[in-house]
Amino acid sequence: MTPSGQTEPGQRKRQRPTGERKGAGQRQSGGQQRRRVRPGDDIGVIPVLARAAREVETAVQKGPLKPANRARFQVAALLLREERTRVKTDPGLTDAERANEQKRLDGLAGILAKTAARDTSLIAMLADDAPVTAAAKALRRDLLLAAGVELSPDELIITTEPKPVDKQVEKQVVPASVRAMQMSNPFLAPDFSAVNAKPATINRLANWELIEPLFRSFEYGAGGGAATMDLPEAHSLRTGGTLEMMRHQARFVEEVRTGHRTFLLADEPGLGKTAQALLAAEASNSYPLLVVVPNVVKTNWAREVELWTPGRTATVVHGDGNDVDAFSDVVIVNYEILDRHVGWLGRFGFKGMVVDEAHFIKNLKSERSKHVLALSKSIRATYPKALLMALTGTPLINSIEDFRAIWQFLGWIDEKKPLAPLMSKLEETGLTPADLGFFAEARRAVIDMGIVRRKKVDVAADIPARRVADIPVELDDDLGRSIRAAEAALTARLVERFQRVRGIKPDASDEELIRVVAHAELEESKGATTGENVFTMVRRIGQAKATLAADYTAQLARSVGKVVFFA
Image (cartoon, rainbow, N blue to C red; front, side):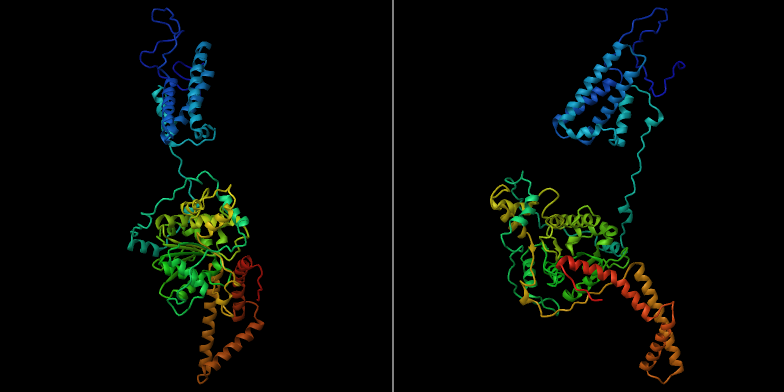
């Protein structure tokens, strides 16, 4: 029992609307008892729920539900569940009244079930763990107030949980140089290159699953043919600098000059893919150019920019990018730090993107693959004629599934189907996956999208008898900083010793003094167990480069199969 005017715990107190009749057990002032009568059909929660259910039912018949009506459906279902529980446990209802209320609730449940049958995505909103948005909570409050239900303060005040901090966003950085560049040029030049492009007519193959057949075409549709597109003959081997291209490189660059903009360049190692990518960017004026590379070769890429395109400048992104020159033509970043820079890189306005060692992105679930694909999609959306190149020396037939990420990067396919340019080529074949000859034609269509694969034996006449290539590496992170600090301390000590010897032997030549200093350093190193000297420094640098050398060797081994390593 509770005092008069109070409610049992967990029950809401309902206000009696003006004009509601008293039920049985309540006495008139004259002492006579009136018979119990059923409340009107327009009073309480059920009529409010009925109106909400009818509104959603009408909306779903007209087309896809908008978010507001989806929230209304969810709230109606939640309140229906609560009201059914109340009716079952309300001691103030007679059996006849309880049966009548349950019958009305069953009718509402039927309306909601029919609505969910029309739009099956609503079924997920009925789950116990389905999220309830702040808008849905506010709608629930308003419906209960309209039904005359007194709510607690907690139910009246709708609060929203703060969004969890995205660790990826938290790690994002924007170098100061990038901010300066954006302020100096806040607007990108409009690109009208795709305005007059005619949309591809996609009818015959629209309902076919094509991704897997396209992959299989490289297993079954080869017929002995090479997996490389036809390239035009080169008019000249000259570059803008002092170097000359090899013939197979010049033919590739000539294809870029004709207007082709997406390539999977899979030449064997040693055929100059780096030079071809940089010369292709020069031929198509695809600047600024973004280059994503493994850490071990990013410094080498900067040097190659100077060698092959001497009129262009390059900047290498290290760490948080404090030393980045955002006004450079080529921005070079390694896979390992993309998570920190993907934000500003996606908004920078690049007109081209090169991914070196593209097999690094084969795992679509990896973060670096997601970052690379997001950058590619952003660049293609901003500049439809962007130059996109995936470089890999890995033979194409190693793993057909590796194609998926690379083709998505190049904009040939998405997660489910070929995109318009490739679909148009497939339509032109006049075949479907059920037709004989589809694999061969589909394979050729994909290759013509921009697959270039040359072996050394195919272009042997173009290659010099012997080539030696130095690959500079940069020691960064804590190890690199400690080595540079130790080098500075060692240099200062040797210079100080040189000056002291000069004071003792003022007439001696520099060469003689250097020999004296070197001899003393050697003698000290023989008995020293701690501290830095020239020999321990060389050893530390060698140990630091060993990891980078091992990484590069592993990349070569994946590309060519066998590597002879001297150390």
